[in-house]
Image (tube, rainbow, N blue to C red; front, side, top):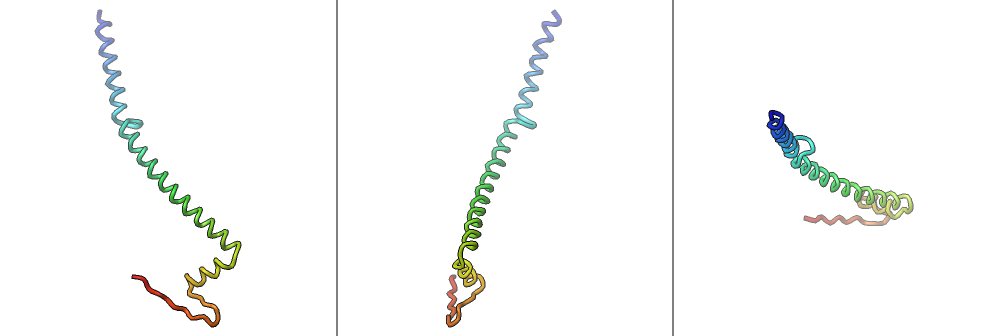
Length: 93
């Protein structure tokens, strides 16, 4: 008879431990939600980096394939001009 009284107590204790693990600690529901947020933020950062990489790769291809891009960058970034040209800068506010 004494064993019959102990078994429900043990089962209730195990159930309480399982519920405690479900709501706190590693792998819990709040931890899972937090990890999903971290994952979403990392995926967004990866997507932005991928777009930057594609843009830079396109720029590298353009620089390797033609002098037009080199000339355009020299004009825009360095303010270089061809002989007999006049440089006019327009400031935007």
